[in-house]
Image (cartoon, rainbow over all chains, first blue to last red; front, side, top):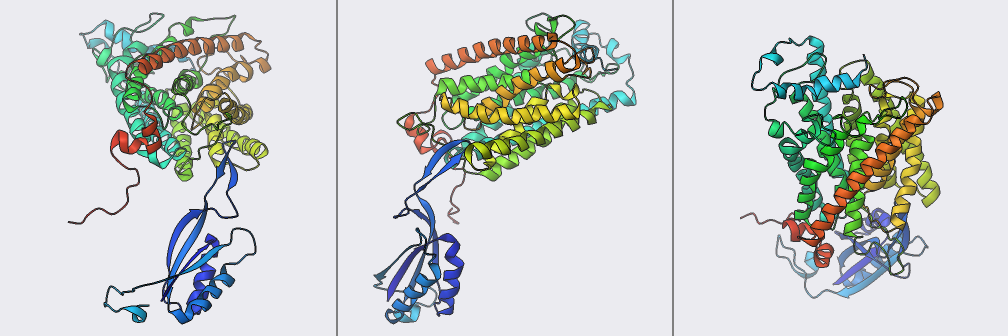
Length: 112
Length: 455
């Protein structure tokens, strides 16, 4: 099992969710996060004075998938989240040692 | 009909007359009030309720334009202003403002002692109505400074400031003007002072205190970069701030029309002028900040509405609707450039209180000298304004009045903040400021996580 973590533009969340559901993903967990990458921050004005937003709002989503679905899930997120402009985000994949469904106690692939 | 001086003497000064004959109560009971008298008292009472609700508006504007980590402290300060303001005005302030006709201050009626509270004089207000209306005004004057001092003031020091402001500093200004003292005695040619509902007496007074507070405190940590360039600290809840502006706008329909101190045909004309100036202020500020900063900044537009309201507070009884729009509109420009100016000279005023209440309060006071057409019951004559051929005398009286208020409030609040700074301290520690005043000062979070134990 793998954990797919994607940091995307917040307004792309619905597109990514719909694409993942269509691809058969059973559940995703979403967190509002802030950060900077190559996009950096940007400058805004408030009451006539400037301020810098160093950490831009993003959405982070986590999906646990079976090993064989990893590539298709990642590709699905990439195509749904891409705008081609700077700040589209990143996806990374990590190993999952153990997975348990709390309600039933099922483990591993059964719990996905 | 529109003789304010007479009304104040029967309504407020009547307090003194009644005091003079205590403990005998026969005098006051001799007059049987008419339906109109009751209507007058009920209207002014209701208007006072509107004015009291402005406290909620001030609290929301200040909380919205500052950071979440200080929101408890900000609501605490605003609630304290109401609590302390009412008690201080009851104990001392009302007597200093209205308890006698000395040039400097009144000396009778402490704790409302000796007043026949229910006695309605002919065509006037009972001492109870007068006290109620004046007490909510006092609470307004003191709470203005809170915004300029936000996010760094020690709570205990603020409470002392609030008490002194409401007990002494503001009531003396009121005595000098509406109470018949120093400023009311000034006459230049035919011109005597006019400040219908308090652009100068209430708002400029609050604005000057706000300036002194911000000056003695110094800017918040992080407000200026290492080169001294202003850095904005955005507010955490713009919907709060905007709702606060709406509440204040509604409250002003008690503040200005209630200051007619009668239920008559002018209540609505004053309401119309008030409404127009607010809209004009907001409209012009929108354009101004859009041009200056490139975006229609809502936090500034809210200031623009309030700027229009503050400016029309003095002239609302004396000017035509067209000039109300002009007065509010000019305030809408003034407030933008004033905010930028005070930013530049390192007066860190998170909500713009100095600009809205101080600068636009001054503008409202002066605008009478230019635009006054009708007798507002203070002026005592028609066509007092410059553009109606009234000459410069009215403008001169208004300017002199502004200078006197500036000198008194400036000197007393500066002395007060200086003493507080040297004794108990005016500002919280840097650690507390960075951590937020809510946890260290009040032991409470404004937005605590919803994770309390269930057993």
